[in-house]
Structure formats: C-alpha cells, structure tokens
Length: 372
Image (tube, rainbow, N blue to C red):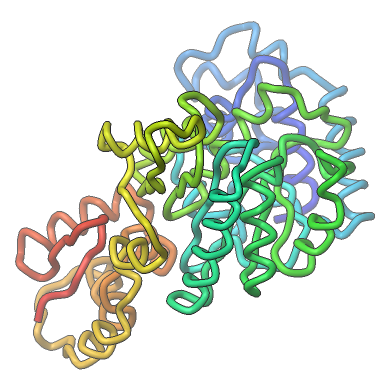
C-alpha cells in the first residue's frame, strides 16, 4: 500500500467519534481512506446513517498532520504499519467486525502463521500457573513446533507465557495497550526486546498513548481475534482474561481453560468457564492438540492419497478448500481461511455445502475432515 493511503488510514483513526467499525464501513463505502476525507460531503449518499457531525469531524487537518508525524516515526524506527487492506494484516482478525483499521508491528514473525494461540490469565499468577505455562508450551513445542503464542505482556500469566514461549524456541507476540514508543510495564522491557527478534510487539495505538484502563479492554479483542484459540491459565471470577474468553466465543473461536481447586481464588474464573460450557477443559498440550485436530501427521498422509478425481462439479472456491484439506489433512476453519484467502462468511457457506454433499465432515473443535 502506498504511503499516502497509509497516512490517511492512520488519520481516520484520529477523527473523534469514528471507531473501528465506522472507519471500516466508511472506507468500504468510499473505496479508500483517502477518499473518505476527499469525498466526505458525498458520504451520506454512499452510506446510510452518516450525520452532519461525522462530515464535520472529517474536516480535520489536525488528524492528517498527526498521522504524518506517526508515519515518520514508523519509517524511522523500522516499524510495519499494516492497514486492514494490506496482505500482511492478520487475516483472522480482519474477519472480526471491530478489527482495527491500522496496526503497528515491530518484529519478524508471520502474523498469519498457520497456527496461533493466545495464553491469558490473572496478573497474580501462582506457582501452579507459572508451571502450567512452561509445561504446556514445552509439550506443545513437541506436538506443534510452528505455533505462534500471543499474549498481552502484562504482569502474571501474560509475561510467563511469553517467557515460556521464548524458553521453548516458539515465536511470541505481545499485543500492547499503548504505542510503540514505550514498554509497559517497564520491568518487562528485557523480555520485550527478546520478543522483537523472536516474534514481535503489536498495537493499534499511536505513540504518546498512555496505557489507560480502557485500552487494555480494547487490546483484548486483538488478542482474541488474531488467534485460533484462547487458553485461560488462571483467572479470578472477574478479570481481563475472562473478557478475552468472551470475545473469543463471540468471534466463534475455540476457548480452553485449565481447571483448579474450588478453593483457589485464581482458578474460580477458569472453573466457571468450564462449568458454563464457555471453555473446553484441558490438562495438557496433548488434550489441546487433540481437541483442535492438530495431531494429524497420519491424517495428513492419508489425505494426501485422496485423488481429486473423486470429487466432481466443484466450484473454484470449493476446489480450493478440497485442495487445502488434501494437503493439510484435518484442519480448523481459520486455517482454511488463511490458506485460501476466502472470507470467513463465504467459507462457512462453502463448508456447509460441502458437508451436505458428503465431501467433508465436521469434527469436534470446529475441525474439518475430507471424506474419501
């Protein structure tokens, strides 16, 4: 994407009263972020619900000037500025209605990795929780060595998940509640620097943004939306990790929780998620991989032997889905979206049609399997 469109995309995030959903709708209606500003007086004819207040707010040279300063910072510091239209933008997140229009990324990993999880939990991690982070990721490294681990760089489970990922040579991304001109908490700076060389730091916030309470809630939707699955390690009855779990469920993503003793304050949230059927109970990475359908070396080999000629009258998109399942074996819908670049709403319709025709079968955990 050219620098001018990137600058206008950043500027759109700085217009008062226009959140992520409206910004995206405006870009779709006008054709680009630049056109939103240049054709602002025409917007009422392009999109229902546009008020004079919105039109007036878009007359904002201050927003454009702010965006130009941010773009200069991005260029100077070798930061990737990803607009929602860029190929490198997280595809899973893009399918969420409230996805940020712009993301800033400092790092070297693929945000569209084939398998992405997030691990979240209380800031008051116990020794049990810390041990779970390390043991889970150690085992997961053996079972699914290319997985990307996402968390929020906060105290407690977040930072221990990042450190456990690094200790086990897994890429890890921290999603921040502020701009890339600072690290909060500062005590995690050393780990953050390590992550830039083996993962990265991601945010929707511009430089100068302070880590206010609301920003952490906003940050959680990125953590949930860019991942295949949310894993809650420890949580009290209320907390940010439960918000992330709710968001994951709302995005139709898988959610898992480690159980704890009924008397443990920071297991009550996990136990409640499991009790209310909002999360699968897991006790190990083997449990998790099995529920996600990621343990499929044998399945992959079997699927590779299925010949295309068994399936007739497939549309181009249906053939894409079949080809991916031949190559990968049993896999989850988000992997199919990433591999085919077919939007999730279209993918759902395609999978339903293929299932009705007896070409594929849906398994536990939202995993799809090609039938011979």
